[in-house]
Figure 1 (cartoon, rainbow, N blue to C red):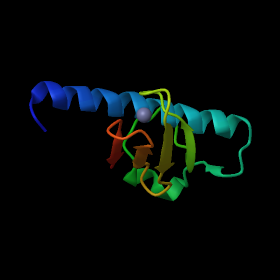
Figure 2 (figure 1 turned 30 degrees about the vertical axis):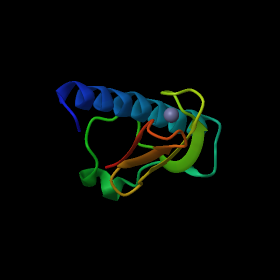
Figure 3 (figure 1 turned 135 degrees about the vertical axis):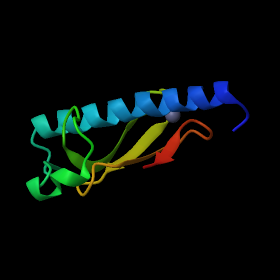
Figure 4 (figure 1 turned 120 degrees about the vertical axis):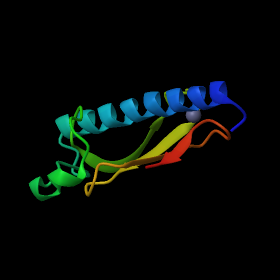
Length: 96
Ligand SMILES: [Zn+2]
């Protein structure tokens, strides 16, 4: 990481991409996608609260950052942590 400004920009990208992923999971849940799952109540204590929604699953979507790459994502049903990786080199990727 070169400096604070670069770090802030990176956090910004992750925040934007993460919101898009969580919204995408909610959208998929609304159309009854069988690969999207609601949280088990027994896992409640492992999740941060509040969340916009508690759906988990994996998939791929147009990247909201570069808008050309494919953003691959997965959100754990165990604790809600998100992993994501854009196909565009240097765009965005992270693991929680
Ligand atoms: Zn991207």
